[in-house]
Length: 177
Image 1 (tube, rainbow, N blue to C red):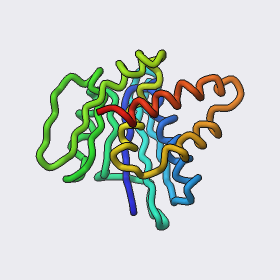
Image 2 (cartoon, helix red, strand yellow):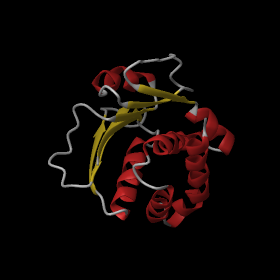
Image 3 (cartoon, rainbow, N blue to C red):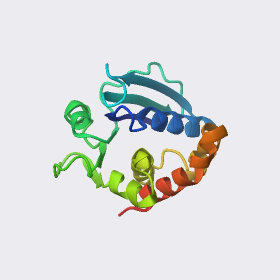
């Protein structure tokens, strides 16, 4: 098993947190992981992306040229990364911010209104976790339980109050049809 994923959006959308969370969950399960963040020049409001590789064997490089999956939260990231997605790959799109109706015969495209769902839950800042939930419902690369354990490990101190919100966001994405 080997999954190469790029998560991309604007700075401030929790892109790096999503990659860190997924990486932590994979490590909890004893998998090999690489995590490679990349920030745009502006950081908040600029572009941001991270690459996560999860495998059952040692990973030689964190660089991903042709990902198996993409989680894309904004249109500029879609334009930049979608041409690199492998045939047969998975593209999870935040349809709240990406209005294009994308249909491809050789890739699985999933439209989820992640920002709208997050707003209904109570905080648009968890749109990243909603999208992650949908990705995990399809790929099943790590269990929800491992993600919950990783959330508990990462959201400590004052951030602990965000734990339940993130659990709800994950579940909403996982259950979205």
